[in-house]
Length: 241
Ligand SMILES: NC(=O)c1ccc[n+]([C@@H]2O[C@H](COP(=O)([O-])OP(=O)(O)OC[C@H]3O[C@@H](n4cnc5c(N)ncnc54)[C@H](OP(=O)(O)O)[C@@H]3O)[C@@H](O)[C@H]2O)c1
Image 1 (cartoon, rainbow, N blue to C red):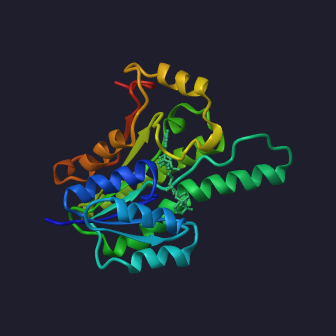
Image 2 (image 1 turned 45 degrees about the horizontal axis):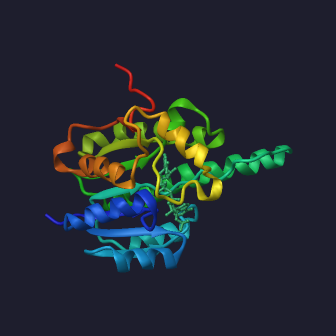
């Protein structure tokens, strides 16, 4: 059965790999992000039924346009996010702006897209997947860590609310994933090497590693998995038994 899958941040990195995975399965995929040119390139390069709706998901009118582009949706992948507020801050105004930005990019994007699409989400069988980070579980990213941890609280509450309607809600928390725009120019060779050393498998993660987990969570076979935070980090942080 062909499903409709909406992937935020689907033009680059992890989101693009997620879009490619669903498109290869024959699903109809809608990708969204702020940069139209990046999205158009992804649409041209990915094989399958992929379309793009440029949108800043912190802006309600943009989010409405994304929701209006689909009649129904089976899977929402809330992947858009960023660690955008590193570097020194001196004034309270700078702290406030940095925290608001981080919460906007990592929490509000997911909340608004989900709220807009919820009326159209398949019941039973709908799937919502949030993209968190190892930083939410072990710290190390200041406002970014806190914003991703906030995403957990919201997703787990949503899992409770929507479970009776046959909708699952889960969170994926990746460790270091290379080949994305996430680190921009901030990643030094030493930083890369130390992140690889922190894993027990001795390599960086790839966007496809995360996409495979998202694919499973979205599958009919995963209907008994909900309200979970699933780590994918090469063993850089072990789960609790
Ligand atoms: N790479 C890692 O090591 C890593 C580790 C843990 C978690 N993560 C998480 O994984 C997710 C994907 O990141 P990535 O590594 O693939 O980096 P990325 O290539 O920078 O992807 C982030 C995507 O989010 C989109 N986006 C950001 N703000 C947006 C907004 N306001 N509205 C709509 N789209 C927005 C970006 O597109 P536009 O700029 O065009 O809007 C971009 O496509 C993020 O949530 C990130 O926090 C990444």
